[in-house]
Length: 329
Image (cartoon, rainbow, N blue to C red; front, top):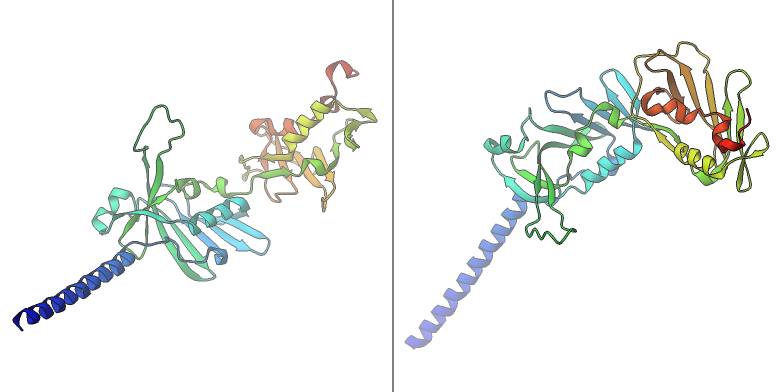
């Protein structure tokens, strides 16, 4: 009887211990879930209509990205411009996929170690309509080299991470990537930089309108390009068209206007699947800028004609499309 009682007591004690262990495990598991986030941004980024970026205290003005019916615009101070649509898309994708790698700190006194204080961080706010959906502090960048640095293994890569925290939380997380590439930029980086962009195979005609009698047209005839009925050098034409097909510039000129209303040079680009021709113009400016370049793909923007020899890249002579020995004086 005594032995049976002891056995029953032991079984009861064992059951109690198992239940207690399970309770502790579940409690720790829930506490861990609360302390370590699975995702940094809970908001649905597809519904974001406004992004506000507050650079570090010593940096430039606040940058605001606003979604409008005709696309995203970038606003700084009293000025607004067409935004780089691809860059905005990349920002939203980056935020949607932002996942913590590890928990770096849990208390406010350690924020300065990771540059996630008000003065040291780049702050990012996401809005859906008028509602603030996410307020993120982007801090210091960190790089960790591969653990096993084998000099013969050239495929090894270290880990790039950035420290971030949410405005309403004390915890600091390390997330994958170099977020300064997305948020630590100036106004020009967020603007639409496109001058010309088209599919080379769709191209059918380039019309160059120049002063006096120097105008001409580059026309596709089957697999050949011609000027004034003469067959062009295929390599020369291909080189120019390749350059023109994806031409952009970040050297915006916002403090000058053309010296006259009429442009000095015009390039009209036509092709299959073009709703309207792409029109690029050059307006006379001062000796530093040379010409102000405008494009129908980027209305309201002017670019420096001297930057990277932009004007000369676009507005070429007909001789450009012929081999030197075939050129007639």
